[in-house]
Length: 270
Length: 309
Image 1 (cartoon, rainbow over the protein chains, first blue to last red):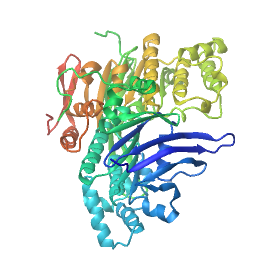
Image 2: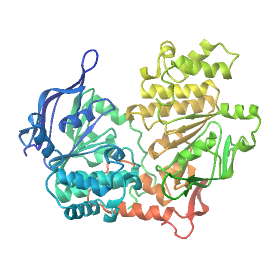
Image 3: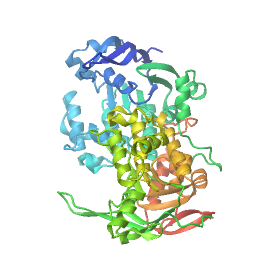
Image 4: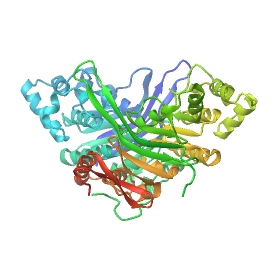
């Protein structure tokens, strides 16, 4: 299977007053069509920098020093501003950790959809409204909430809105940077099952970034473990869980506070 | 089982906030509804719940940030609302210390660690040699006693800063620590070591710890007792082994089932979880009519109107 996105020898430096700090050290990986690739590591390991660089959202002092990012064979690093604007969101979109920060607090949900749809082609207000309604229903929010402002929605609903926005143009790849870290475990589970359901229905790939490797193991097909800007191990999720090869991966598992097996039956309430 | 009086007892605690936004109507939010809990010296009580469940409000009321709308907070048998003399209030504030979620904002960035701890030591333990006491306290929280005092907060990692916060509670000889999500901003890899530190402080210093968390998985590491809160009410409480190991209330079971388990693959076709979550939430909102015993010391809420499965 050919890769949807391949990253070859990517290096990202942060320029500082002294020597540049290398946040991402010559990493290579690929994301296949319809695949969820997890990227795990501690804070500061460079995992978010990778996501920002992939979408070319990194800003100075961050600098891509070398390497290639190929999206369906096209070189992302050579895109012009215009190409980049068209490419972002229609082919690759992103869901950030805090939906409150990625939604505009003074605009209604509908206006944020309308803005985004207009930026990618002519659309009438009525069509935009239909599309918004359809997308909100798809992530389990009733369509009449499109006239609400972000602060009128709960944290979980805001994250669903962010997901709906990211899916609207049917991109082939969605980058999710700690999409559920600010939410409690029950809502987290609901949203991730929603992502999986939509993936089955629409077909897209996900780069899923989190520090919670147990969560990552539950939804990823393959997992990459990052430390200090390098991918120390990458492999199938089952292998990372049951037979981690790298000592650092094992230490991550050991550090996880996990629940003792439940006493009586039911590991699952449903 | 435990004969001595609890160090802390919450008795029918309720808190209603009046929210008056700049625009729109004033509303009332019932943050806490009739919460009763008790905590003994040398033990830890985990207070578990989702965001907005009222667990942090409990912590803030114990340290006196908010006054109860109804109910009492008893410290060693005395209602803290009756501690009116300055000496009594000082003693209470010394005995009860809070450790916050964000380890950076709790320390003054312009001062060294020595300043943070020496001030507390000189105010509360004026009789001891400050340098020796400083070193002893840093060793107690497993920080390097030689290099740490001269450092500023930004020179320490999140985990080390959180250790300084615990050291500060030790410096004033606290007997009860209210720890509000002390590990949730730390990396997974150091979370366990902070839990280990709290475990040791509890055992060696006889500290009582109220451990406020949304992570039910960490309760098992530290707390003998666990209380689960939902929408301002305690829905289940008892020994941690039994509450976390064999939860009986619908909401606790939901919470327990949602903890990421690497052995359980999630699928998109499983709509059962979301439906169950919705049903359990709706059933857990009505006022608790009574607490029913399900095992020794293990009690679950029975809600008015709707009963849970």
